[in-house]
Length: 507
Image 1 (tube, rainbow, N blue to C red):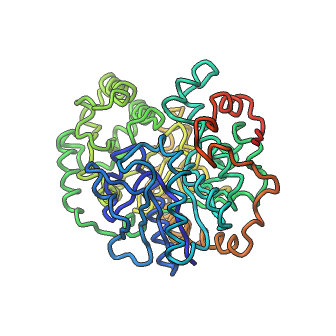
Image 2 (image 1 turned 30 degrees about the vertical axis):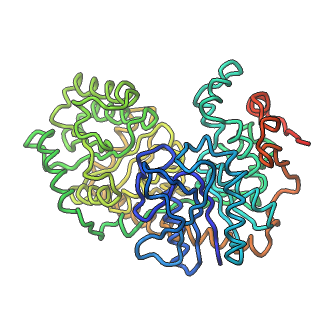
């Protein structure tokens, strides 16, 4: 088959440049790249279609075509959308309609044929899939990655402050694009059952997708790159990573404790990641303090327990409370925090291997984790996992009575401590969960298995494009047919959808 990935935002290039340097980039790009490569390795032709940027600040994204090194059957195709320079994703909407989608259709007409199916990612990719499907009949799947209504919830929107929020984030386009995408896609792909039933059931999406209709949804979790995250792999910077870890332990950990195992956490310095809860659990357990150290991997920060972060939110909301717990409980000499050499997956995997050889444990104590790829990557390298019970880990690390990791209540430091003690204090438990977690990931959570499930679904869709789609379609808003001031989506429409959620009709 010939499959197109629709990704106007967050740009792709052969070196995966700037992957963590801009909010439009990040996890979604890794997901798409790995999935596309895994599909191609199974014999299919794959195009990653994105936006062309001709801007001296972003030279990697100027050429129309690009490829990944040593990868066959995957093309990166960049097509113009609006101004030549980089613009944030929130400002792309009108350019998708007027430029990007017409340029995609023109490109494939000149090439001699469209892909058999599209897989659309994020709301702007979904909107593009809607417009292409209406014009050509080419079906598409929709993978949202995240939905706008939940972000509005987190911003604590009210009828009084919605205008201010909308001015910054342009949610009126995103929400209506998401409603269209989930309604008109051949199927909506989610990473977990919780994503399907909790996120898509938000009142803002009522009338667009029925979460109880199995025809409208497929749960396909993302995968771990087992060529990198494996106990058997060896990266080019393996020894350099080991040396860095030993240097940072020598800097932070009392000499007599440096050979102890560690509790390892690796996450962004965001309040919702609840690193504070992990530190509190360590502080309240004399058993943990006697047997292990606590190691926090903190992105680009080399010594965040002593140095201020560049990000004021991370500094005030995350690091200041952690330092207070460390100081009040005299944890100095038992805790280390640092960033890795280059923030690459290879360095992270090497760190996990180093820690696994010492009998360490990985911890993710986020208040809520939508999917939770980090604990699966750690498990693939041989680290047993303690993870939040809230969100994706409850599905990936548990199946009925079968446990593949230890799940804990992230709001209860005592429960976190109990979960960690279960592995730290019992060698048989440690060995059981190290093996069970690794086998679980390598059998069910690799990009190969993700690609197989996508491909099986797409083959079904190509043979019967509209079999899964609901009978009642949400009409395309006039703005997404002809973006002009007189067709623009109003703040009142957004307010009506978000706060009272009727099914709108458009003439």
